[in-house]
Image (cartoon, rainbow, N blue to C red; front, side, top):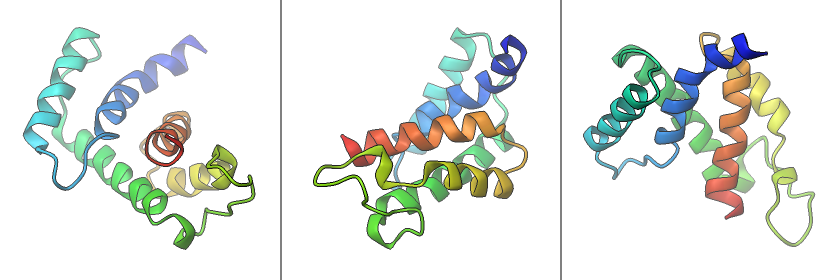
Length: 122
């Protein structure tokens, strides 16, 4: 378990910062935050290609969550209020893990749930 956690820590740190990034966001500011977090947590050197890949993942998740009822993952089964059950997070995770095989599935799952919480439930 500890080894898996180590493997996903870099991706998790980057995705946490990317979750708040939108097209109007200053990308340079986001990248500076990512660099600071990686340095502070001693997770390794900043890798632009890896960050770009994670940004593409974030963009794909963002598109699905923000288009809501047009998303193939949205079901609105949970009732009157927004809930995690409104999205099929397991299918999202599987589909995005297939589309982004270089990103650990655990990181994708945690990011999908975090992004839904941050931008749909809240």
